[in-house]
Image 1: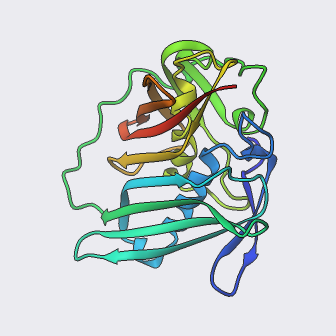
Image 2: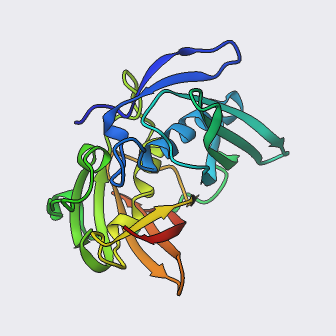
Length: 262
């Protein structure tokens, strides 16, 4: 497995955690900016570590990317915004101390654990062993796209149309075992890469946000994105995916894309 995306670097007096970002987190568009997956994973980790999250599960997660997330030291924090009798809303933030600004935030609704029917499945008709390895575009920077293991069942980054790929991300934080939910979140942001609507050597698809509705807690390290990208007449695109683990559907995602010529 590749190097983890982040290395822990202590805790501040206000409870914020400091992390050094590794080159594994670098995105395909610029070596100094992160792919959206690692920030989503780190924001999820902060939410899961809240004391109030101990007996709850994330039902909806929305990340806002407030600008390029640098491959640089970051501060991570989380807090509860609203406590309800059954559900609560929590927020997590990633802060760039060198620039003095927040670079990403997430809000999540947390639901009680284990109160509904225990329905799971149907299991997907394929697994990681059924997929194949395909090279990423030569114009993309290495980092995240090489740190993650990809097994393509259909489509590819440079094939126009929907795509299906199994993904396995490395550990999120060095010295820790990543939770299945945080590991899944580091992959879901890739829906716009799994499905291609335009030539990726000529066009960029930069997401401004990511919303994931989680049906249940995922299991295992591998997740599958069954993804599709739809374009509007201007600069807006929408990438959606159904996310599977080995047991069956686990989440659905959507993200608004800024479509720009490279």
